[in-house]
Image 1 (tube, rainbow, N blue to C red):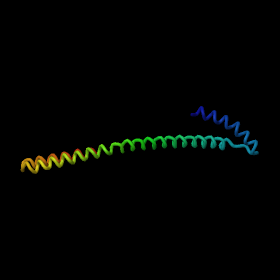
Image 2: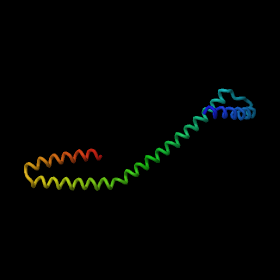
Image 3: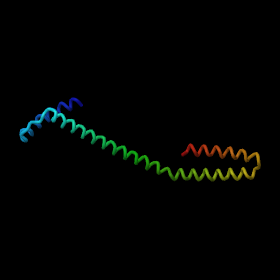
Image 4: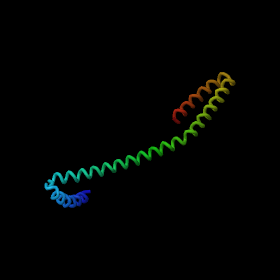
Length: 117
């Protein structure tokens, strides 16, 4: 980058001298350097803006892909609810010892549900 800066300085010095003669006042070294740095800052900000736009597009694509899985998630939730109801009905019909087992299975399903979301 320092090489580009020296090239910019030499180009800006000749351009600055020509414009200084036209305006009647010569620019100081500080003003020349300030213009160069302001130009570099503007260019860097433009790069930042471009990269932020790319990031925004990528995030929008990720969200769109995530939304495509919404129906699949709903179907699995429905399947889980049906299976839980079936297990609950079997536990009620079976008797006392199986009710305790049914509660354990219900707790396991809660853990799975918590991991999935």
